[in-house]
Image (tube, rainbow, N blue to C red; front, side, top):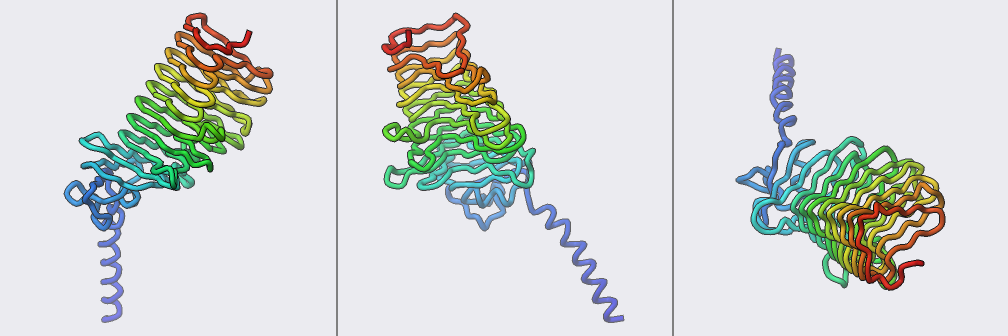
Length: 319
C-alpha cells in the first residue's frame, strides 16, 4: 500500500505541475533598463534584455519596453512583436555583431514585428555587421525604427533579407536607415534584399529615409530561382555613396516600382541591371536630382517612367 500511495502521489504532483509549466510563457512581457532576467518579465518585475524576455514570451506575444535602456541583441525563432512606444529609447547596441536575427527554423509561418527600436552598430573600432537579418519566416514588419552605423566590411547592412525558400514579405515604414556600409570599399548598404535558393520576396518601403549608406535600397534576385517584387513609395534616398535605388537580376524577376520618392545626392540615382527583361525598374511621381549619375539601364534590364517625374541637375544622365 505504501508503494501504491507513493506512486499516486507522484502522479498527482505531475498533474499539478503540468499546467504551471504550460503557463510559464506570458502573452505580454516587459523589459526595463533596471530590470533583471531572473524576473518573470511582468510589468512589475521586468526583464533586462530582449533575449531574456523572449524565452518567457509565448508565440504570437509581445515584448514591451517600459523605460529607456539598451536591451541587447536578440535571435527570434517564433512569431513575436518587440515594441518600444513609451518615453526614451528602446535600444539595441550591436557592436561587432547583428542586432536582430529573424530565423524561424521550426515555424516558417512566423510573423515578426519590430516597432519603435533604435538599432545601432556601435563604434567604428568594432562596427556592427547587420542591423536586422531576415533568414527564415513568413513576414517581417519594421515600423518607426532607426537602424544605423552598421559599417563592418563583413556584410555591413542596415536590413538584409537572406531567405532561401518559400515566400516572404518585408514591410518597412516610417523609419530611418542611415550610415550603413562602406562607400570607399563598396560594401554593405541600407536595405539589401538578396534571397537565394528558391525564395520569393515581396517588399514595401513606405515613408523610409535611406541616407548616407553605401547604397540605399537594392533588390538582387540573381541568387534565387524565385524573385523579388518591391515598391518604394513616399520615401527619400539621399546621399548614398554608390547608389539610391537599384533592381539587379539575371533571369528571375527583380521588379521595383518607385512612387512619390525623392532620390537626390547619390552616386547613381536609380539603376536597373539584369540579364533579361525580368529585371524591371519603374518610376513615377518622383524627383531625381543632383545625383552624380541620374540613372543607369544596363544589359537587358528594363526601365520605364510613368512620365510624371522631375529629373534635373544630374550631370551624367546617359544620352
